[in-house]
Amino acid sequence: MEIGSHDSAAASTDGFKVIVPAHPLISHWVSVLRDQDTPSHAFRNAMGELGRLLMYEATRDWLPTTVREIQSPMGPAVVESINHMEPIIIVPILRAGLALAEHVTSVLPSTRTFHLGMARDERTLQPSVYLNKLPNRFPEGCHILLMDPMLATGGTVTAAVDLLKYHGAEITQIRIISAVVAPPALKKLHRKFPGICVYTGAMDQNVNEKGFIVPGLGDAGDRSYGT
Image 1 (tube, helix red, strand yellow):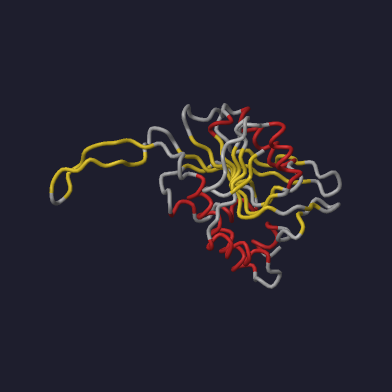
Image 2: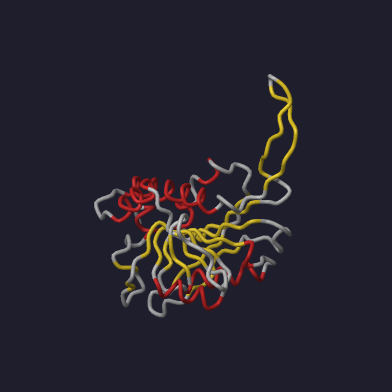
């Protein structure tokens, strides 16, 4: 399992990567999220800003492009632009994933969003699906950004990836974006989906008996929506 910055990380032998981009703005927004005194509206905004930056990093070498000739006001020009024949799809895991995905369309306005609602049982820590708005089958060649702010035990995110695969997605079509991750989730992802890539703002080392990352940032959904 490879963990590093964009500049230093290389693919492990099975292709699994965890990228923590080395960028001061990413560190800043993570610090805002960690602070227990950050009010709900500021927390939600920080989550959205972090999601936007991580989405930028996750698509750096991954977006489909096409080369074409256009006419500028001063003459012809050969340009490279996003290839809309290969759809870019956002799948936020509700409800906290909505905050993480809130600003991504400001960078990629042509994305399509499919919502996936999952809840974790506080006693067993096992996930259940309460909303599935995924397509019957994902378009061939599409690129999927699965957005889940906290990867703690890994139960929710691995169940979500299983659902994406059930609906026709290949592991190479999926990248995961998260605010904070912890080793139990990464180990579970690595074991089940060795070729997947994770982009995150921070990696903490501990998960407590209630399944929360320590120090983490608390309950991302409650803090995003003040409930």
